[in-house]
Image 1: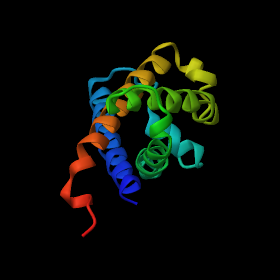
Image 2 (image 1 turned 180 degrees about the vertical axis):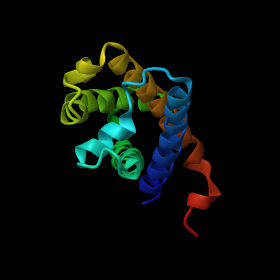
Image 3 (image 1 turned 120 degrees about the vertical axis):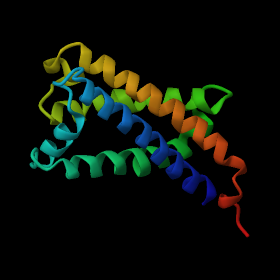
Image 4 (image 1 turned 180 degrees about the horizontal axis):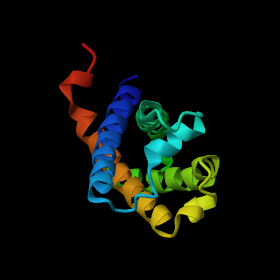
Length: 148
């Protein structure tokens, strides 16, 4: 159970980091066509309710991707957790590009948004993966996660 809890904590931290980067991108006015939260809200039929998009974003990043990282960790290439995290994040990016982007109306790989969208999403996913793996490793010795 500790590995699963650790992976969800790492997933939450990584999701929080890329969420901050997404907000910085928005405030800077960079790639305004790529509004992931609005896109996620639109998938659920509520594009004007960003809370739905944020909830889905954090559930996916924390629970779904966090748990999958723990389950697939030993099969991922690399000897360092941050590398495993990056490999995992590339797979998550690919899955997002062929499922979420088309569902949101952006087409495969977000091509309807231009070439910036898939490149920016890849960068965000690489950051997510590096933070996920690094945090997961850092929590290995955490006294908070040890059974008493």
